[in-house]
Image 1 (spheres, one colour):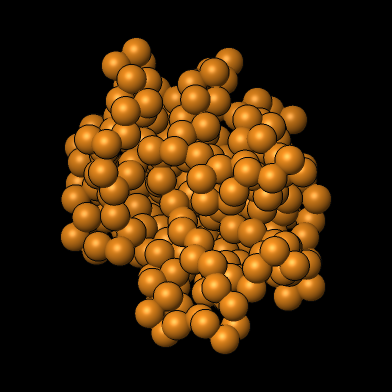
Image 2: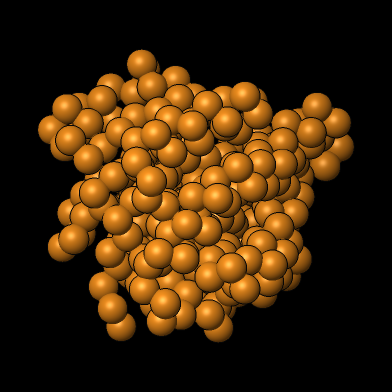
Length: 255
């Protein structure tokens, strides 16, 4: 198993929670990315992320709003300019939202919003950054698919699994569950469609993690443990995992 060593990485939702922890732990890799693009909707309010960027010249903070196509395009142009002809090795689609509510109180507006973020937004950013991912796939090592060569990793959830239905007893969260189920299908489609281009795509369940979005129950995972596990799994993913759905521990999950 080769160590994870992408030269360039982009992480969405990097201002807090799992996204911020991804930035911290990617910086701690034996061979950290030369370009680490940390994106979020409001960079000026991301104090801890700003402090990291001040300490590490390879951290580049960019505004990116998955609900805004123009914002995604502007981020693409900025990343393209900063890469100076190189490709993007790893896109981690981490940004997300959760809205609580029962099956009776769920609204059309919530359904549209979370579908826009988790599905339409992740599709659009994957499509927009595809030329950079293709360039990385074409110019990097040609010995199979990997997260160090060219990959899209979608942070999903077993809350959207038809059989797992994580934490149903704690809340229906229908808009979240339905949008994550759709994200799983998107990941499956991207995985099948892009493997011929040399690009790996898979969906990862990070566990039920202690974050502002996930809550803080004693039984939950700490974000440090979750991200450490996910990065370990990233280093093992290959062609046979294209379009798959896996846990932070590497277990194949049921759709």
